[in-house]
Amino acid sequence: RSPLPSPYARTMDIFNGRSPPPQDHGGDLDLDEWIDRLQTKSEILPERLLKVACQRLKDILIEENNVQPVQLPVVICGDIHGQFYDMLELFNIGGHIPEKNYIFMGDFVDRGYNSVETFELLILLKVRYPACITLIRGNHESRQITQVYGFYDECLRKYGNANPWKYCTEIFDYLTLSALVENSIFCVHGGLSPDVKLLDQIRVINRVQEIPHEGAFGDLVWSDPEDIETWAVSPRGAGWLFGERPAQHFNRLNGLELIARAHQLVQEGYKYMFTDSKQGKDDGLLVTVWSAPNYCYRCGNVASILDIDESGRREFRIFKEVPASASAVPPRQLVPYFL
Image (cartoon, helix red, strand yellow):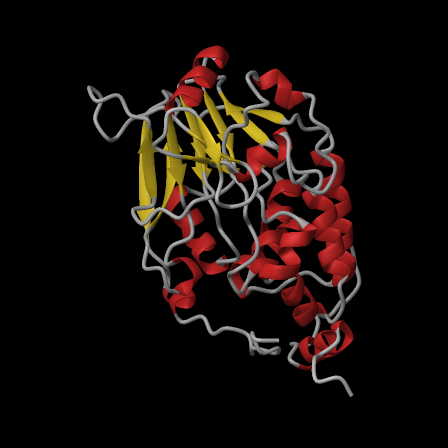
């Protein structure tokens, strides 16, 4: 016998530590009922209904633009990373759909312990209220990344097979790349690309694919702003670091007031960059919004959402992790890290 676990053995270990899969009592997908069951009882969809929901969502997403237009008022949210109970608190603070419009800027899954509940609730809300919620793809909405950082294993543990992960990762391929609020605020997961000067160049990208390692698509989900003048190689191994000049250039060419993005932990919940010294630190060409409080259940950060009213007035709403999140227990470690 080999001393190292095979992929099959790893899968069997995950199965041995799993909870029983959700029961399917038949019937059609009742969106309102399942939204309520997820929000109040954390009940996940049976596999058959998840497949139905994903098919209906695919039909909606295929009609969306790579730069999806959104109207005010809107609440803009950053990374969630499977922190389901904190996302419920986010809705309590920002207001509930359909009374409020929402943009989620990607990284719904991985790292947190409830990626299945998190993404299923977002799926159901999008199918139920397609005009009220925009879901942007993050770098974690990828087959490769989710097999390393938790979502794949969580699907196996909660369903007993990989089909739900396959349904969800097919949806990832259809998620839009960015949103444009009233032609003035550009929302994207990561940042800019040296290959993209105009929004029209994003509009023609073929997005229905796994995230490429290089090129404009990959840059949009991987890049980060940095206190440099132009461009630099990213330590992430994908995307770029971009400075104030590319941000100024991009905003001017596209008539934008602001780039809103996520992708980086911010201890204070949000952070403006490339600020005009006259305007002070609470304004700038770009803002990072982070919506996972006490990230990974240990970082101690607060989270924020950016609430913009009908007149365009911005207000950051700050929130901390909820008790259910603070007391989260990791799933049993099934394979030692050194293997």
